[in-house]
Each structure stands twice: as C-alpha cells, then as structure tokens.
Image 1 (cartoon, rainbow, N blue to C red):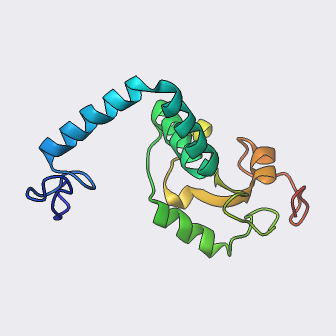
Image 2 (image 1 turned 90 degrees about the horizontal axis):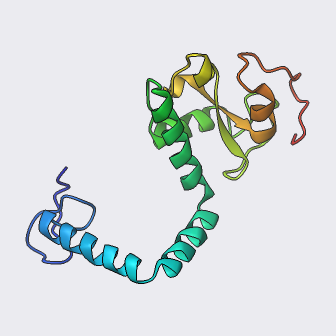
Length: 150
C-alpha cells in the first residue's frame, strides 16, 4: 500500500508504511527491536502507560482478536461505528442514558456467540451496564429508562 509520500529517513523512495520506504522500514524495525531488547522494563512501562491513557485502543484490539478467533463474519470501520453512535445521539440504545467515549460500548444486536456478525448494521451503542445485563440475549430485559447509569 503506497501512500504517495516520501520516506522520512531517506527522503527519496515512496513510503510503504506511514513514514518509511521498504528498506528504511526494515532498518527502523531492526533498530526498534534492539532498543526493546536492551531495555525491556522501559518498554513494558511505556506500553502500560499507553494502554492506560488509550483504553479504547486496547479494547478494540481485544475485540478484533476475539472476533478473529470466533471466525466472525463482517467488519466495520471506526467511521461506520461513529456514524451509528451519532445516529443514536450518543445515547444508549436501551436505557437512553447519555454516553461519553469512556462509557460507550459496542453491543451486537445478535450476539457473536449466537451467529451474529460484526457488520455495522448489527451494532448499537450501549452503556456498559445495559451491555453486560443483555449478555447474549437478543432482547434487552430492562425497561426503557431504567438503568444503573441513567
């Protein structure tokens, strides 16, 4: 996937990653590996800090991993997901409480374990309380407006 820009390291060849050409990317990877091997504690601490400050990235990683292991059909982009959230007005699809990026969770209308897909059309925004309460059921058991959050 060539993005059209020039390499940040050599400034000549077109990039194949976000910043480097193929040769410079290989050099950068070797350099990074040496750095990580030389100071594993520093690397671990850096990853821990990143994961704490970006919980949504870690959550997305584990969701994708789970979907891959389950061989779930379908996929969606972040833009598609955010348009679904905007459609619901940043409110839980079940209890209608207001959601923030920290309280937002993806709920599969038809659970993955019940044969649902990961297409955007099978997703609704939900607060963590409603999402956990719903579990793998198709219908939400709580009356509208009754939730631990809202």
